[in-house]
Image 1 (cartoon, helix red, strand yellow):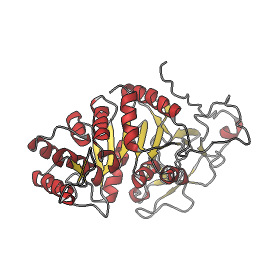
Image 2 (cartoon, rainbow, N blue to C red; image 1 turned 60 degrees about the vertical axis):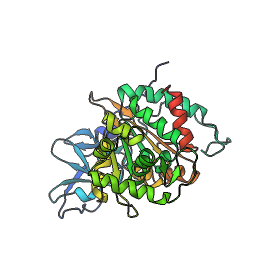
Image 3 (cartoon, one colour; image 1 turned 90 degrees about the horizontal axis):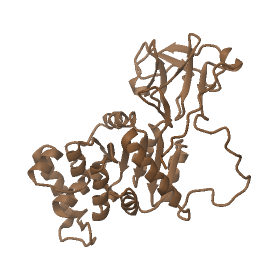
Length: 363
């Protein structure tokens, strides 16, 4: 059966409450990086703003930002990108009564039956059966390979095992990865696995520690820095396997966001946190499915910049699917606590998860 996206239910702006609503109020920014009082902060949901009697959708949104009118359409800006003179939408009511409407029910079918008041096993935990989640994910990824943009957010645990490294590389090679967001550690230990056959000094298959193995990851970083770039290192050292190798060979973009505790780091790592955020958001602007694995901070960061919808080139509006996968219940539940309410969570070892997904997709 072909995968079917959930239909988007547009607001009916012909009803009296919307038709009689005032235009949204706009106030100019007086000082760079400072929003006017009573600014409207954006959410993960589709948001509409009434200007000159017409309702306009903010097409590229993210939570905790500011809506700006550029004279033709609604732009969403981080506070740090505001400039004096920008026209900012103000108003704290989101029901349309101030010309601002946050559409939380766009992908909720009117025919959905009410849930029981009380029922067991409604949460997501290590006791949850995730079989149906895997089946749905396989169908989704097959659809997205041809029709969407799949962004994976990876923690270093994915690179600590030879089977998961190889499985994810096959996902890249077979077109199921369109972008990768990670940190210095994921790339370092994956390249270490190809260069030294270890990750943090442990054999990537047996997990046996090598003598002086604690040098391996910094030796790898140092060697890459000597070449000047990851692609040059891969070419010069004849690297033939791994996640980053597959991304380079398939020309899949990867964004490496720096951390205060990074070793080295690798040449491609963004040392400026805001440059890293901008680079990550450039990938998320295109994403239709996002899968975060074993990286709490990167998952939360990505969740905060990922809306629940995407406006496609043909003007249609579709859902953005967001998965958080971690062996820790705390890690996956943290996304919900941070406002990423559309995240679907799977509690499992991410190395097993990657291998299962590759097998389920037949790669």
